[in-house]
Image (tube, rainbow, N blue to C red; front, side, top):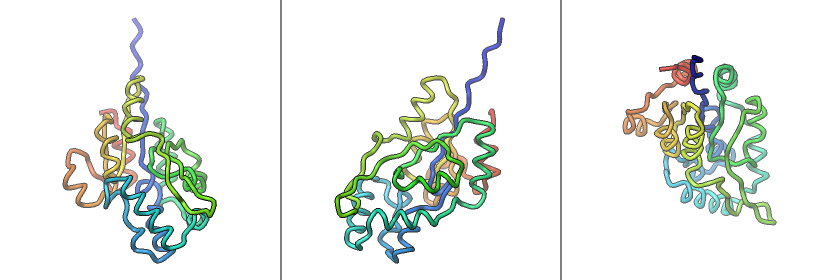
Length: 206
């Protein structure tokens, strides 16, 4: 009688704060706008956060092309690419992010073109961001559940409020460098600060 194979491991990772710096914080620094420093670490309601950001961009006369120039000069977090390479040698990796394809391209190249599921931006004729289109609501959680439903073993890592759904849905959820408020409130998830620790937890069989 043949032994059944163990389920293949898929690791789902958040992007910003885990592999790359927070894009909006970098944009805020470049344009000296403290109002743009807020992220999902601060405002869990993503729709409210994005509408707020779009209003600030229009007020500050910042167009999509201006943001893309900032992103082109950004780099992954120190050690992120080596971590991702090591993880991809042991598991299938999918990045689940609330960022946008119009933002992520240059940084995906610098990370070795991992698989990315994210969203799209809408722009007006003047080049300002006018809105956004989600792939689907709560897409991170639904992606993890879908992968599990077709027989994959899923581990996940993130750092923000908008990652908690996928961490809860995964067979193992891990917080990576989370804000203290999230770390203290969601102690059910191990919290680590180093890529070596994260790699061990994501790939552990037990």
